[in-house]
Image 1 (cartoon, rainbow, N blue to C red):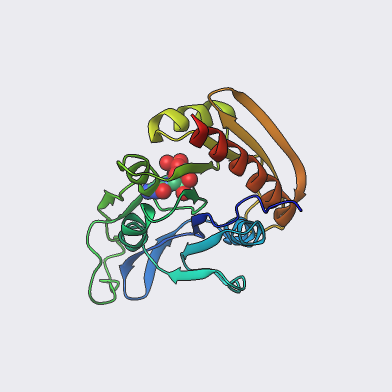
Image 2: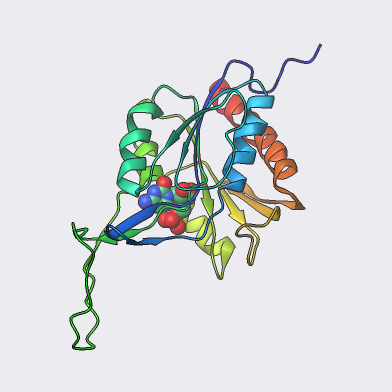
Length: 221
Ligand code: C5P
């Protein structure tokens, strides 16, 4: 009998994009279907974990047995995740969180004023959810994702340090958005390892193995 890799573990996952309102009918968002995060939720559940999934606006069915919390904005995602983080042993941030939001969402639809001049949009920075969780005294084992348009390894390494996490997973794109396949680059203090091109559920199962192994090693220290 082989015990499941994450039997009895609690895993928290963010997935999908965030949506930052400009006014009641417009907003700013990122490209993300949520497929990788939802595949990870499934794979972690299959590995025996109790999974909480905090999802931005996506069109995906909730994997059976997974507790799902829906949010829109980065601030809402932050407000849901932070209090939950310490109750989980592993946190995987797959969400494509908007780095900035309009400084103040207008209560009514912005109208053209006839002058032809576009309105200007003041932006403010969103909280970094992953970095904040990684700073908690009783933090879970944290895993971040990186989607870059260039220099994945360099930016991934920088992220490892800046966010203070033991593992960054790079999307070896270029354009994986909405697709069912991808390849991943695992970046940690020891080096890099590629998980070759595959469907997202297979990638998620492999990633769960990698995370479980690192989590156990860390606990034994
Ligand atoms: O900073 P950047 O967006 O490049 O980092 C990506 C990683 O950080 C992802 O794991 C993403 O989910 C997480 N992140 C976050 N909160 C933010 C921005 C990114 O949790 N505000």
